[in-house]
View 1 (tube, rainbow, N blue to C red):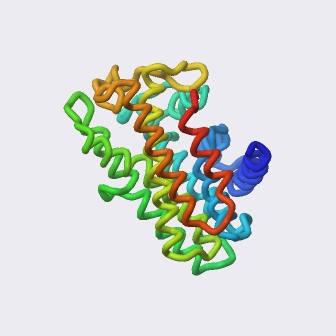
View 2: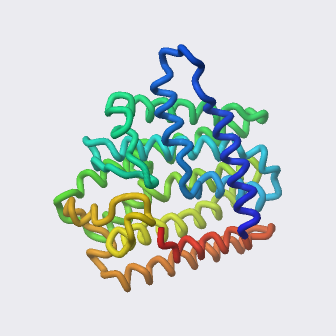
Amino acid sequence: MNDVMERYLERIEQALRGYLPEPEKGDPSAPVREAMRYSLLAGGKRIRPVLALAFCALCGGDVDAALPFACAVEMVHTYSLIHDDLPCMDDDELRRGRPTNHRVYGEDIAMLAGDGLLTLAFETALSGEDQAASARAAHVLARCAGAAKTGMVGGQCIDLKTEGGEADLELLYAMDRAKTVALIAAACQMGCIAAGASEELLAAAGEYANGVGMAFQIRDDILDVVGDAAALGKNVGMDSARDKRNYVSLLGTEKAQALVEEYTQNAVQALDKFPGDGRFLRELALELARRNH
């Protein structure tokens, strides 16, 4: 698994730098491009772009065809983190072990950096050679990242409204399905689209994404309670500080981890519907369920 992951990560990092090169000297828009690069090239797990490449490979496609889609998903994810960290949202100081974007560049440039990455994401998604596949993938990305109750922006809105209030498991599931799962589903399905996969396989990719995405979010809730800030690269205990309900506060750590395992098994089972070798994606799901950072 590690060799495959390293190959994917190397291709992703190279492609991201190609889509967002350093600004030229004297460019009056350089500050916003520098801020975009600061967050986009800061590393991180790159789970979403890796999933795009892995599902393309699983469906028998050429992963190079999925690279624009993989990078587009990571750009959307990064823009959402920049905006999520702003004082008007979560007002966080750390992201990936470094000061958050607005702490370095100011709120105004950070806001523009997020806007710039969102726009660049769709320019990138539509840059593939197969225009029909590119248009279809961009549509999936727009839907999953959008303001509907099943999209990422819609999920963030639900999240804001739960601060200082009550939230039950049903509301948490709706929020996390939109805020976290949706973009992971976009990555998986865009990889399938790059390979020309069937609607049945896109649906199976969505099942995998739901399992992995929910497990990832619940594990995040657990790490917010028991995790180490230095290892995570961000502050911990933030949900409690904001009086936000999560799976740990409602169920306790042990039952929350049991849910992580259940969702992970659902993801693994979805891979049985694919004719290709799903070992990498299976191992990735299991690793994410056990992560400590």
